[in-house]
Amino acid sequence: MHEVIIPFIVYIIPSFVLLCMAVKVLYRNPTKTEHRLLSLYIFCYANLFLEEYIRHLLPLEYSPALVTYWFGNVGVLMPCLFFHFIAKFSTYDRKIPAYFYPYIFYMPLLPVIFTIVFQKNIMNSQYFYQFGLWKYPEFNTPYLITLTAGNLFHLLILTLLWYIRSQKRLSGHKKILTLLLNSAAFVLIWDIIFGYFNFQGIIPPYPYIFGGLIWIAALSYATQKYDFLSSYNKRFETLYNLNPAAILLVNQKGFISDCNPAAHKLLQTCALKKQQFHQLISTDDQEEWMLFYSRQFATEDKFSKYETKIQTPSNGERFILIEGDFVLIENEPHFILIIQDIHDYKEAEKAIRFLAYHDSLTKLPNRRYFYEHIQLPRDQKVAILVIDLDEFKAINDRYGHQTGDDYLVHFSQLLMQHTRQEGVASRVGGDEFYVYLPYSDLIFVHEFTQQLLVSFKEHPFKTEHQSLPIQSSIGISLYPEHGTDLDTLIHRADEAMYQIKHTGKNGYKIGVRPPAR
Image (cartoon, rainbow, N blue to C red; front, side, top):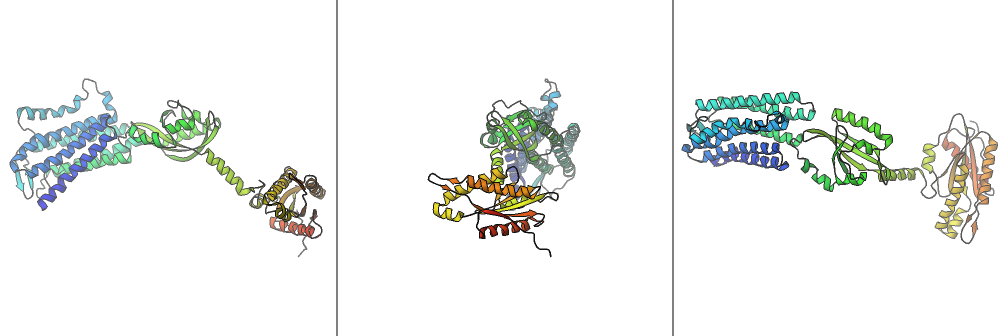
């Protein structure tokens, strides 16, 4: 059973994984030469494992032919494909004269053609022997020459990767090339150790092909981690069609390279491509955005929750929230900007903030506002008025809650009009109100309160059928005479208000100074 299972694990599973990866790389963008080259390169690696599995199953006499016409030829094709791939990825292919490109990369295939035409093997061992489970090649001169040529080719690849990395300035490119360089160096060391030294009986024949799995794994990691060999259309296809957020692809100079339909809808224009994004920002925020974007591009750092405003043709200025990340698209640096329209949210937030500190019925500041925002100044006198409506419960019971609510709104408007210039009025309970009133002398407090009572008397609440008078009891405390904190002042004013309640109502009283201790 182990003679079946072990070769299956050693050869078929890696071959299947490599085939899947080759298809995946090609699928990311089958129109791109880089994707096709790398896919074919990985496919060749899968063929090496597949050939070894078939050679293992067949009698020993088939090994020379399989290695000559399959294993050896595929092994020569692989570095050719990889050189071509590196040239495309690094854009150095543009420097090669047209009459040399791409033929220069496939010059090493001449021995392959010689082998096929003349039916003569010049690159691979022709002698094999069985040792335990495996069929090993002899370490003869053709074998060592081919291995050495392959390693020199490998060393040339390392040198090329190192040189390309030294020329790149973008950190994204450098990270990809560093990963490829390190993995290629590891594979070269692996090839030297397991290629020149005989480990028969310990590991399968041609052990250096397993080092290639590390190389392929590095390519797979780069594809996932750094979006290596990204597919422009595939990446944005779903976002263009389905994402409700506006998505822009912006280059280093701020020009929009591409966008999704939601961007057209938000920005209310069809002509977004090749337009500078900062021109869509509100005029007051443009300079700040341009400085911020330049800084982020220079550091290649992603950012989030950048809040600003855009100017739209029909809706005017709208608040937006921008998320951005640095990416390489077709080896060119860009920022992907994901823009959310938060204008309605900001308006709702504003309304919620208003309701948190204001009474929903009368729109006056509420108790929370009064306690959190009222500050007692050290160098100014302040009066605190506690106002309680007289007979409000009777109005509610007789005419209903709707009339009672309308009565409160009418009263609040009168109070607001009277205090708008002088102080702050708040509704702190059902029919209880506070007034914060700075003053210079006590006469002003008397005049203000008397005018307030006159205004209530002259502007009763009128319904369709009758007029309901407004009467109130008002207690007043003075800062700092009656206390030095808000709670004490409200308590003194409340005591004075209840004295009015018990002595006839519809009047006002200034509290008395607390007794000295």
